[in-house]
Amino acid sequence: MTFDFLATVKKQYSTVPVDRDFIRRSKSGREQILWVGCSDSSVEETDALGVPREEIFVHRNLGNIVSNGDLSSESAVEWCLNLLKVKHIIVCGHYDCSLIDKGDGSVLGGWYKNVTKLHALNEDYLRKSDSSLDYECRHRKLEEVYVLAEMDWLKRQENVRKAIEEDGLQIHAFVYDKHTNECFRLVEE
Ligand SMILES: [Zn+2]
Image (cartoon, rainbow, N blue to C red; front, side, top):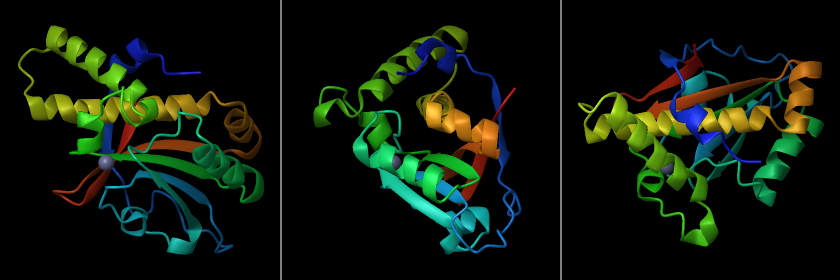
């Protein structure tokens, strides 16, 4: 199961700074959050959320990708849902992610194939809808729609859907800006 690429690039959403009390500290002191981040992002999960490190299960890889169905990501999600019973999954991308921008779908065993496809569609869509956008704006937009696509993909997975319905699991899309050291939530309209 892959992305709905066209729906993804047309998404309407706003970017909202993440409040330090967006997720409250858990009384149990155990993991309550699965954080999916990019390996080359300088974001500090604890700074972004204001919760202690022991409450966050961190899964990082090249380009914060969970939708490739790789064993490592699948296991992390399953572990967090079934054993830890986390209440939140956060997919956090970051602006200036060179891996996302330069990713060539043909290399690294096709790890980037969805991102490459999304990149091409996003460029095409933005050129038609607003040709005045410069490279940096288009790149930021790509990072945002990509994270939203990962969130959508997660929500469609059977185990995630079940946890949303039965345990009130919440899925969030974040983007980190290293220049301002700020995290933003992407909120769909
Ligand atoms: Zn990155």
